[in-house]
Image (cartoon, rainbow over all chains, first blue to last red):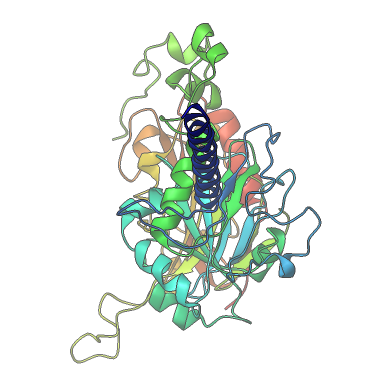
Length: 280
Length: 161
């Protein structure tokens, strides 16, 4: 009897070890899928491969093993088995200003250095099926803040030598800033469309880039990446930041960016005092 | 970024920190009854430049953007008029000289925004008539802002029609 109990006990312990191992393996698989943008929870949006990767301001965090191509991979080869573009590992580059034409044939230059806030560059085409979802989503002004509060979206297609301006004009909402520039695709090493690059104009640097197969997936990936990267109101603060009372961007910082610091004359003068009499 | 953008016979250098558009609004396809003129008249080229992101939809004189300007921002509008308008006395002959701080006044804005100021000039060159309208984000700090506007305007080139 004692021998039977002992054997059964050993079997139970072995089964418990097996179950724990299976659960752990399952959790690791789910975590890996989640990092790739696949959410298997009920009602989850944005299923399918996604690779948006956002780096910290210091650029010290890389995305090794999270759906990125090794550093130095040519842009044309940075495409996953699912046909989705993947970002390149390693530090992200500086922001490049954009120059090109609009679908209406007007000239346009967009500065992405020395400015304010985050700008999401949406590299799209008029032909790819996945891009249609983004063109449609960006017709809603609320969706143009997908890069975080106060952010803007600039849709970029290749130039008129490779894209039909009429087709782009038909897809782009009149209020969506849209630029046709093959040079921009080259400057940002865009593998294939759709591809997204998030630029911090104040720092003049790229803070994240990657792909998504639908707008809902892009929104989900960006929200998570922004919080992880320290952007936005929901961004986690380190223990040191909390203990030292360090804050995110404040009104003081906004004034400082405008050249108004402590002791600035404009803070101590009556603005109306310098105002001349209205002209007759 | 270096280089120039050009459209509709206007061009300017792309200076760091400037958002620039050279546009010509779409003319109405509906003619004025009894005329071949489009409803609302012919549209003319217009150059807009701002030191922060220009929204896609703006008024000719910058409405939609000037309300968003901060104290350190500058807005430049170079709008073409019908050549016949250039015959009027208010149009000076030749490219306008650099702007001075004294050219600016809070009441010279199309719509007065407290703390800001504007300046406007009209001139003809190469048989084309233009109105130059510049808004500065701060009346108190207009000195360096005028210099910034002049830096851009010095690169503007106008072709003959």
